[in-house]
Amino acid sequence: MIKTINFRTLGCRLNHGESDSIQYGLHEAGYRVVGEKTAADLTIINSCAVTQQAEAKTRGAIAAARRISPYGKIAVIGCYSQLSPEILADLKGVDLVLGNSEKYRIQELLDVLEKGQKEIHVSKPVSGDTFPPLGLISKGSRTRAHVKVQEGCDYRCAYCIIPLLRGSSRSRSFRSCIDEVLLLSEQGFKEIVLSGINIGTYRDGDRDFSDLVSAILSKSDIERLRISSIEPDLVSDRLIELMRSEPRICRHFHIPLQHGSNEVLGWMRRRYKAELFAGLVHKLSQKIPGVCIGTDVLVGFPGETEEHFREMTDLLELLPLAYFHVFRYSPRPGTAAAGLGDSVPVKIKKERSQELRKLSDHKRNHFLRQFKGKDLAVLIEKKTKLGLYRGLSDNYITVNVKSDKQIVNSIKTIQITDIGITEVQGELIGG
Image (cartoon, rainbow, N blue to C red; front, side, top):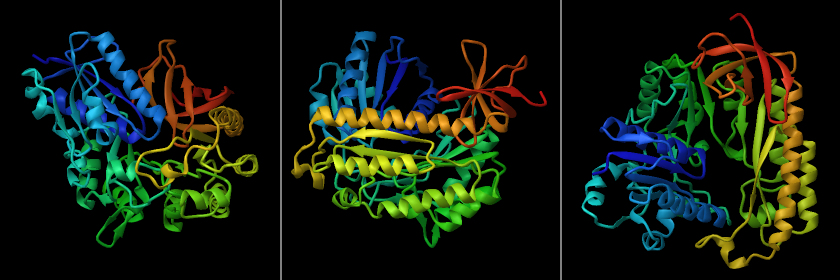
């Protein structure tokens, strides 16, 4: 019988939030969730397929699960399951494959596993069932919770497989989103992260994403509200004003650029030009003091030349960005770019990726240095093995601090004293 379960989650933060929800549901049903390096009766792998590297990591996670739990069963759920269910089912050790519309049904399918049957359940990801049931959120350390308010995407960027794996854009009801936040606030969470695939397209009737943010602030007493990744053409003036004027909204925007060359952006079928992105970043930095702005960039898109790459690096160097996530292009089946081949050599892609990651580290350190000697409000999340408390400021800075008291899951004012490469040290103000 299945009594113990461990999780391995790959890919985006939305995946991690969904894993938390599934994990909590299984915990409430009486299953014991153990660490991913602990042998278990069942390993659940929440997969990613956004790149070839992500697929390889999923296969690696399956191999690791067989090694750690040689007598355990394996269920693979999520995006790679949606893309290639038969391939996964044929891999040694895999017993159950669930797509994006079926992953929240895993509890009812455990009986199938216990009977020794191998099954695939994958359908088109168009259902509202891809939203977690109300209240199905892992309590964890009771500091931060993801609330999934939107799913799928109607954008058809040439390189992106996500619309094929997650379906068209659809939104959770206004009332359900607010009820979830109210419930989580009552349970002791201090911060809510509003999550989705293309969150700026949120709609419920005539109400948009800014209306949802405003309503959550007015109807709940949640102490912090964070916005996950949002497309540059969907950051409205109203949303900017809400962040500027409402201290409970975290000063943090993650806005995908993907490329700094307008020609490449056109090939990618992005809905903006580099000038719009640059203007938005400058506007945010001027209107919201201390705001952290991060981005995603993609190197090696078919046809990308050294000149195109230099356009991107020049833009990234000039803009007041705090960090960027760097991805190497790989062809995805079913996308518009799949027929273009993969013309940029792997060696060149790796070199360009390394250059941008070094630039990102420099940007991150530059962003951190401006806060030395200043006070930040930090949500304390855990105590480290070194005895320090670690938390996250509203503007996405990891802060370490000493304290003789138990301060996990509290928002503390911390004066920043020392700056590291990616983290800072501070002193607790006022106990």
